Image (tube, rainbow, N blue to C red; front, side):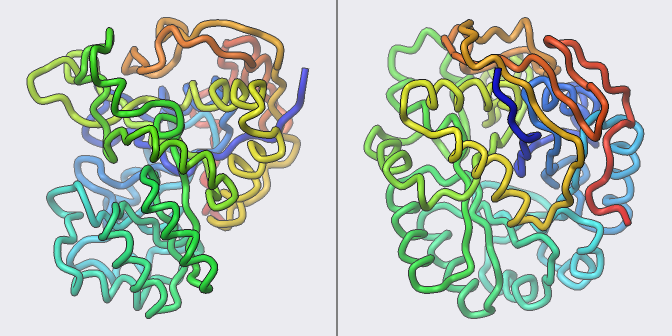
Length: 354
């Protein structure tokens, strides 16, 4: 058995409000605890999006009554809400700016709309960016212009990780995360896969083997592992227009522990990127008396039927992994024992509450 700190996932789509048939604060936080994650930060692109005081309060009230692990809630940057989200910043995990692949109230399809957010945001969390390829390069220029810390979500491409390396070397205040599916899948998984291809639809898209290799070769540049847990039902994923996204909270740790067993990753790097760095980057509080007990020798196959997420499937179905969570202690209380969730709804705490 080994003991790890409670992991922190800074990129989770809880789906509440608006799409609770996929997930909600109760099921998402059960999935988190089952995977050894004791703190999640929830994305704002819900229905309605979390982008003002009314919607932030709505999300936090739902979390307060349902969440079983600790949590924070992002605010979303919109075309005209820079002053409001800056005022609400102390209550938020961070600010999320969608520079690619989103619609509606959070769409920022003109760089002039970025200016006020970069000018006014003051944390405590950074500006987190969905920014791919050239959009990411433009966002790094804004970070330098405004001396504003930014965190790049779900880096997937060789050109992105090498650009971030150069930006860090030149003093740009940038950190970044990578998701397990971009470390373990390539776009070739879409060819002749036994998995229905809609189930492998994700944003950013799965990349080439050269891109995956570049992520592994530049682990020192990657600050965080994050799941981008984005549950959809199988009916949606297998439909004519499958929405992008994978569930990931329950597969993060076993996939990474398997990489440790294979010598691709060290246990120190796992802890650094799934606990130490997220806590530092997002200014998160310590969770006293919190630990995850793992049987690092346990070998098994990942099965959605054994998971807590409401969506009921995983793209890693049948994968052989090594390392199983046996017990989770959160703030001195046993909250998981051999797959059984012992924490009650509402046990989780808001990481920004005073």
